[in-house]
Amino acid sequence: MKYNKYKNVWNKDLNQLDRKVNEFISIGCKPIGGVSVVVSNSNVIYNQTIIVESDSNDALGKVFTEPAWTEEVLRLYADRETALAARDLLIEKTGMSNDEAMQWFKDRW
Image (cartoon, rainbow, N blue to C red; front, side):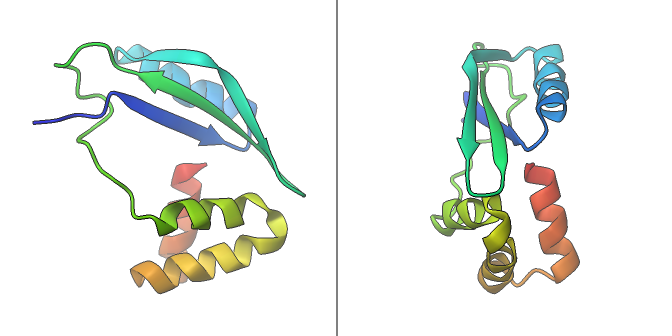
């Protein structure tokens, strides 16, 4: 079974990002590179890439390719002015309820 070797961990809050990355470190993952910053009109989003070096470490989960529209949803959500459009697009593409869509965004940031 194939497992992810890399994962990008995103968050709007640098302290929350640090906590998430430290959780992955505690299960055998390592951060690579530095923290990158994505700046939009009204938001700053921090990103840290982590890696698992052992093929037997499934900490990052099974390989999963996200649909192409996911990137557009995240780009829209990063800008406070288009966050509602991001939520609407997510609901349109997945059939989620409003509450499920909001939880989806919370889980990602």
